[in-house]
Length: 165
Image (cartoon, rainbow, N blue to C red; front, side, top):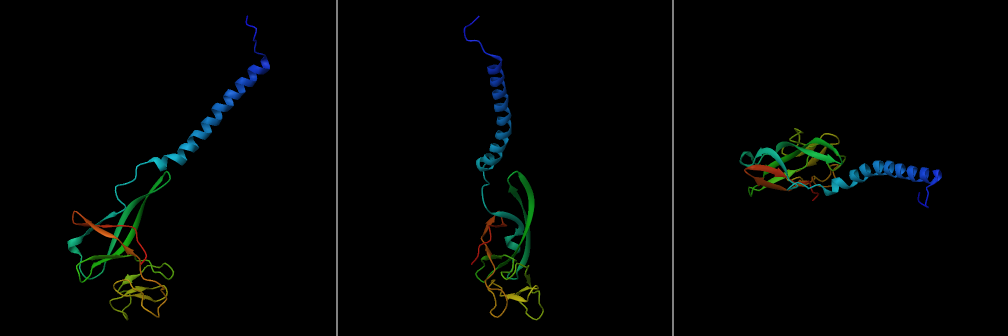
């Protein structure tokens, strides 16, 4: 026998410490991975979202374009939808406007008010915007509609994140 005998008390202390360490590691590792893994995942190629709208089909009349995209929140993935008002200006440049009113966040419509033709109209409080998204003085909105950056990929419209003017 060796001179360094392990007493019962030491044996229990070592055993309980080892088991407790494994249990703590079993609880902490998933939490660390939950926090670190989304940061290490590879991001998409672009911040632009594809739509089904062909650029060649756009006219000078604003058209409502609905689109959908996958949104990742931590581990939860969901399909979100969005809308933009898109048209070509007099220079044949594509303009995409956010439909969210800058007054209280209601949704604006093109030619939604028969008394104000060729304007974006907010039905919540009677807000008006001109065709280029500028707010009409004397109506509730305090700022112009946000603008989406646009690009063309294979003849289809792609929208970026809406930016304030």
